[in-house]
Image (cartoon, rainbow, N blue to C red):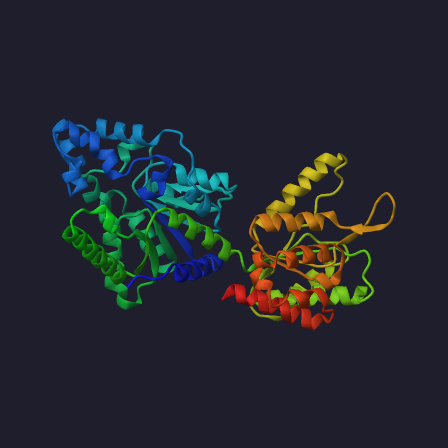
Length: 474
C-alpha cells in the first residue's frame, strides 16, 4: 500500500531536522533541465547497430552490443560527454534539495547539476566519483555527493555497459559498501529513479537479507499510470497491475512509494518538505527602547526570556538579531533551558545574528542589512514579532523600528508562519493590524488573533503562542 504525501512530508522533514536525511537522484532528476534519460542516451548508439531502443528491455545490453561491435569504447564515452557536458539551467527540484540541510547525496547521473545546485545554495560539495576519492575529505565541506556511476568529465570510466556492471564489485566495491551503510543509517528520498539499476538491487537485497523486517524506511516518487495514455483498456489494466506489483516489491525493501499524477506534483511536495522542515526554526523579531503603558522593562524581558525558553523546550532553534532591549533576555531564556536539560547544545537551539555595525554609507548599510535579514529569515519557518521601537538618532524621539517591519515583509514573502504580539505595541501592533485585517491568509491565527492583541499576562501570551507553534509541528 502506498503512503500519502502528507506522511512523506512529515516523516522526511523530521529526518532532515534530525540530520538523518539523504537524497538519491536518478535520471529523472536531471531531465527537466534538458538532459536525456538512459533511452535518450542509448538511442543513437542502438540505431547505429540496427537496434530500436524502444523495443529493448535490457538497456545495459544495448551499450554492450555497441562496444562489442565497434571493439572500442570511444564512441560510448563520446556520447556521454556530448550528452551531459552542455551548460543547462538548474531545475527547481535540484534547487530545493540543494538548499535543504542534507549532508548525503547519491546519484547514478553523470552530469554536474547536483553539485552545481549545492554550490549555488552557498554550500561546498565534496564530490566522490572515483574509489580513491572516498578516503579523502574536502576542507569545509557541507555535503557529500556520491556519483556511483562516474562523472561526465571522465567518461571512459563511467558505468554504462553490461560489462561495467559485472565488474563493479571489483572496480568500485567501496561505493557499494558506503551505500549500504547509508541505507541502513539514513532515510533516503529517491527522486527520478526507476529502480532498474543492478547495483542498487544488489545492495538492497543484501540489506534485506541481513535485516529482514527491520529494514529502515525510505521513500520514492512514482507517476501513476494514466488511463488516457492507453487506447486499450486491457493494456491499461496490465500496466496498472504491474505498477502495483512494483510498489509491493519496493516495500519489501523498505521503500515506500508516493504516487503522483504529474511530475509537477513532486516539485510541490519538495517545496512543502522544505517549508515544514523549517518550522522548528523560529525567528524572534523586536526591539524596545520604551514600553507602552501596560508594559515595563522587566515584563518585556520576562516575555522575551520565557518565550525563548519555551521554544527551546519544544526542541525549536531560536534565531534572533539581538534586538535592543530584548536580545539579552532571549539569550538568557534559551540558555536556562539548554543548560538545565541534558544533551542539549547551544548551536542546536540558539542562533544569534547581531547586525554588522560601523558601515558609514547609509545605502550600503541598508543593502547589507536587508541581505542579512533575508539570510536569517530564510533559515526559519516561524517569525514572532514583539514591541519594535527605537530612538531616532537625529531627533532623539521614539519611532517605529523600520527593521522590524522589513523583517515582517521578508517573512511574509518567504511564507513564514507569522505571530505578532499586538499587545506589545509599536511595530508589532502595526503587523497585528495588517494580519487581523487579512486573517483569511492567516487561518492558524483565527482563534488567537484577538488575544494576541489585548493580552498582557506573560504566561498567558506564551501559552497562546506555544499552542500555535505546536499545531504547526503536528
